Amino acid sequence: MTSASCTHCHGPLPLPRRADMRYCSGSCRVLAARRRKAATAARVRSEQAAHIPAELRAKHRWVRHLNKRPTRCDLPRWASVRDPSTWSDHAAAAASTVGEGIGYVLTAGDGIVVVDLDHAVVDGELLPWARRIVDGLPPTYMERGRSGTGVHLWFRGSVSCGRRIRRGDVAVEWYSDGRYIVIGDRVPGTPLDLAELPDAAAAIASLV
Image (cartoon, helix red, strand yellow):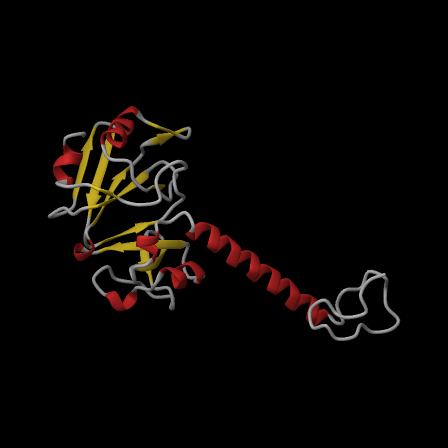
């Protein structure tokens, strides 16, 4: 026999009642469903956060994104990569429902450089030119771009200015300031920290 109290509010169930009755009212049924949904969302956020390096999660550099543009986490307004007041911490960004997902703002003082390999993945495998670059650089945190065909490699380092190279099928960009990066799924087997990349621009360019 089922419990005589409401699963949600723990108040008494009305009489007479069905044997499988769990809620005292339709309102409690709806509220219980919302609570389950919130708990599921929190679990998913926790699992996703576990795949992002702690040193990135610890910084107040997070935004949301919509149509390739950064948005604020607290309001449906655009964020700016030059205005820290429009950024949030990771927890707020992950919990926000604004836009389509989370992104990270690169700023010069943080000493983080991201290498973006565009159109580098086909059928789940890196193309030869992309594999050469990945294998030639230190193992580091790597995640898939939003399209599923690109990858981002994250390093400790800096470049004096961003650069983009297009040469045949090769499509490489690198930045350490004034950009935001949409965060995708971590590439399985890659480290959960950022490798050091001294003289980053020269190291990357030598592999292109």
